Image (cartoon, rainbow, N blue to C red):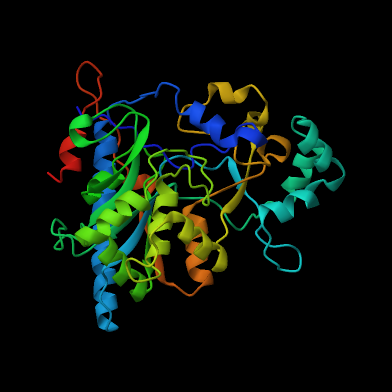
Length: 385
């Protein structure tokens, strides 16, 4: 039975801050036993996922025809899907009242400048006044709808062009060893999957986004992922197997599914071989004004800033490098939203479309005479059967 836990890179945004030993703290967190809270997908979940795959494939074929009519060849698209419900992560405004972009370091002192210095030096817990002030910084026009990213490539030898089922490249975390396939417990691995496998998950809603990057980015990313020598460079230098759902975009010691896609797209700004290390990509991201999504946990999730909570977090989540989490409950993460905004900001996004299942279209769970839910073998979907 196929056993892999699809972990959204946005699972939570909550932990304590240990300034002097942030990387050591996360390294210790990864030593926790991996929690394989895996359960078979129900029959209705699989059917809904396959229905969504059909919708996305049809939409890709439409986009391919539209691009061809404009004299362009569609080679690569960025796929995003729903999965983890992220409603409890409020998105903080990227700009001040004058419209100037601001980093999290610039925003934090503005939230509560009278108490922030003492909090950071003395290590006090959450400050309710700071949190209340942060609520006024929420951006009600922006939200994090999609939780997981992949890159779909047309000219892969295993793409099904007739259905628009392109091969999808994605990063996934593994909760157990599968040495036969080169997967290690509590580490991430890179996958080339059938499109259906990208969407097969326990999803809170069945929606997807398709983004078309510029023709130059498409050409370069295709070369990066399909040419053997280039792919070897991507696998060895742009992939960090230490998985952290709360990784910062510029942290060399860890990576997650969304930050990996960001790294590949950054390398795709140039011909293969120009960006050879993630650190080079970080410099490019800063120069091109990439802004990770600033977020604050809402409701009961705001309790996650308490000092003891990190003891109960799984090994996939560590936010000790998010220095304003404990004191302000303010963090920054790589999201579909931040990547789309970055592409738009630099005029690198040709088009973005959404598709998905309406509530009235969802399959409901059937039961047999004993009331047990139906099961599907997900491994066959991953292999494209």
